[in-house]
Length: 209
Image: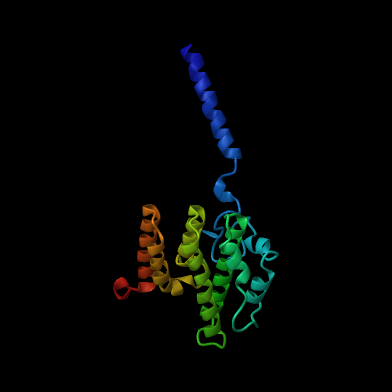
């Protein structure tokens, strides 16, 4: 009987392992920030063609962002509307990823041409994009969406994407201000840790904050 019970336990454990191998986890779907550890670019994350997925949903914004001749303000209404949608569903996360792609593209373009004709224009537009998830964080209490927004800010300050190491310290004050909007102790601790890492990026000190 003991042997039979042992074999039954082994069989159950094996079945559980096989199920885990074939069952997709929640963080592989579209309802998340999709660009973490995607490398220095932002068109796709591994086999996940993020930019191609989002172009049909946000043709105006992404069209303006990837048209290097575009100057001045651009239309963020679609991503603001979707990021603040209630109830939270895929469109909130699609909007966040579209904001992230747009930010990385404009930030890279600005930093690649310091003092050039489009430097200040692209820097301003990139900074404006950061305000979209910042505002949504205060409006949306959904835990998964707040986590995803922090994932974006963490990625934007990680230095992994092209030219983000230079601009990472600028995010510190933006992220620090999220703590006042957050009651969850775990998320507050994450914000504090992220702020510390942003403050030290590129040799920036936190004493002036």
